[in-house]
Amino acid sequence: MQFRASDRRRRRWRSVSAAGLAVAALTLSACSSGEGGTASNGATAPAPSAPDAKVTVTPNESGEVNPATPVVVKVAGGKLTGVTLTNTAKGNTVKGEIAADGLSWTSTEPLGYGAVYDLDAQAVNPSDKQTEQKATIKTVTPAAQAYPAMIPAPNPSATFGVGQIIGVSFDQPVADKAAAEKALKVTTTPPQQGSWFWIDKQTAHYRAQTYWKAGTTIKLDANLYGVNLGGGVYGKTDRSATYKIHDSWVAKADGNSKQMQILHDGAVVNTMPISLGKDSTPTHVGPHVISDKAKEVLMDSCTYGLCPPAAGAYKATEYFAERISNDGEFVHENPGTVGQQGNSNVSHGCINLSPENAEWFFNNFNLGDVVEVTNSGGPKLPIYDTYGDWELSWADWQAGSALR
Image 1 (cartoon, rainbow, N blue to C red):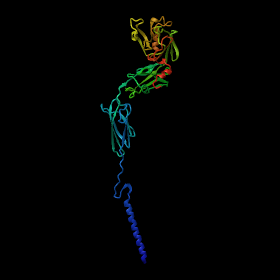
Image 2 (tube, rainbow, N blue to C red; image 1 turned 30 degrees about the vertical axis):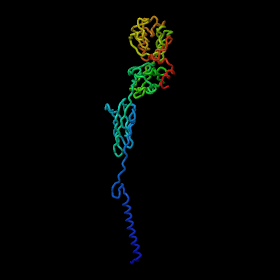
Image 3 (cartoon, rainbow, N blue to C red; image 1 turned 90 degrees about the vertical axis):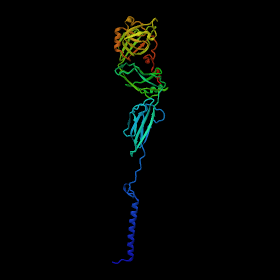
Image 4 (cartoon, helix red, strand yellow; image 1 turned 30 degrees about the horizontal axis):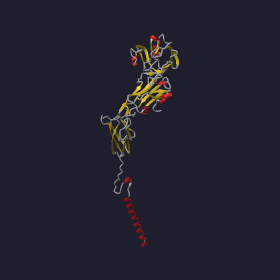
């Protein structure tokens, strides 16, 4: 077969065109990256480096901090690998825990007053590059520390009557009573409304609106460590106490009838003749609470300033005695006044009973049980006189709270 010259030129153009396309394709391929970031020379492009982990500490280093405030270390862009917080002077390490996600660390015990702590925290970013953060933490130095004594003193084996007053007595004056009161938490089971009353600048008492319900459990938590009580005074420690209220025992002593009714859980179970204070030394009127008891008590009028040879001075041992106020009032045996019991008031302010009735009373009445005195001719029991708290109306009692 013969070809024309024009046919040969077309075939040559097609061949050149195909070769040109192949070269172009090769050129484009050489200028683009392949899979896996391979460049034209076959090298892998470097991945961008991750930023350093950023560690922050709270509280920061500005000023003195409250030792009750937890120290918290947080990290952004990484995870914590270790944190130590060390008392500079003592060398002991503060306990703390790193969260499960590795993003924070929190101290789990309080710091000390007037101390310096060195903090060292380590963290890594996603590229395992380590970051270290150091800080110095200084805690506040109080002018004084107030210790909270519990009222009554905690005794896990004791139970108390429905009139028992609870409270806290500080060994330092409290200028900021509201701050102290906010730190005092009372929980009652079953729930009962209650309120604090400041007896003086160092003592606060707590009571319910009415007597406690029989069987009540009272939990007092004094969360005072680190609390600024004003005037440079801080709470020295946290304390707690639990009080159990037993069944209800209330005695009603009437100065007119010279009889005392005994109520157990609201029901009259006994009545006994009594002799209250004579006109010159009348028994305080109102609710009294038993604060102490002993089978033998030496009663000495000198303890409240009436000493021999002053008229009316006395010193004698009495039996089956239960204290109902701090100025010398007791319920006790007095064989010498049995003839007056039930018909006249001749004591120095105590409630006199026969030996038999005094022993019965002693065996049934205990700390916190109530003795209500009426028609005695005496003044009201002072609120501070262990325990005159129930003399106040509920409205007046609530007015004694620093948070009202």
